[in-house]
Image (cartoon, rainbow, N blue to C red; front, top):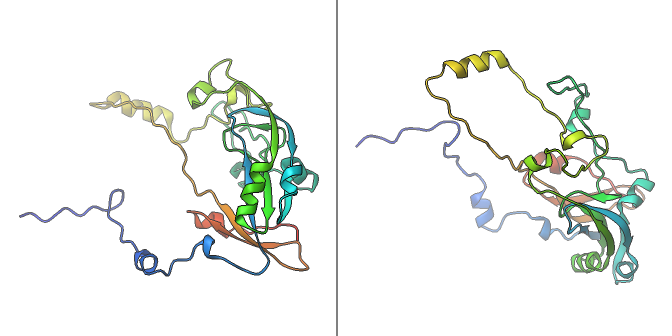
Length: 243
């Protein structure tokens, strides 16, 4: 009987290194953290794909026992929290689309300020002494929306007449970029014995850090947060909050 062919690279079996630790009760999870002064956060998220934010009323949420604060996107801006920089900005900018135009970089704030642009976009954060209190308070926040036209398909969003999500971003296209030698690529395809064409949809999976437990540092405008995330790079970045 022939021996199975070894597969290297994509499709190769990868030895799992973490199973023994996890299966023997030695895993470490954010849910297990219970530090002195710990607080919990819960987000208020949009149920709409596209809507203007008319008002955010946190009075009922603030009246719930154990709630330490409710902060909206406008609160963060007023306190000096700026937009999240894009990778384009982090790499020095200057990247251009195929036609020579600059990449579109609309401002992206940690919490929505005047408009929500996808279902689940966070627009307020509740901080409380208990996880249950944070969740109850988030549900008590009253938000008034003015729903706007929306599309839920990336190709449809590029069509003429589609609702525009960001001012100054024509056709909802952030960039149209390519690399390599287009002429050589075209010749290779033209000379190929067989050509397969297909459309691929990339849902861009990524590790989205979900802050769960927070401990303030007395005397400092900083805190330590424990996060659930599938990306080490996301969790390794420093976090800060007002003490």
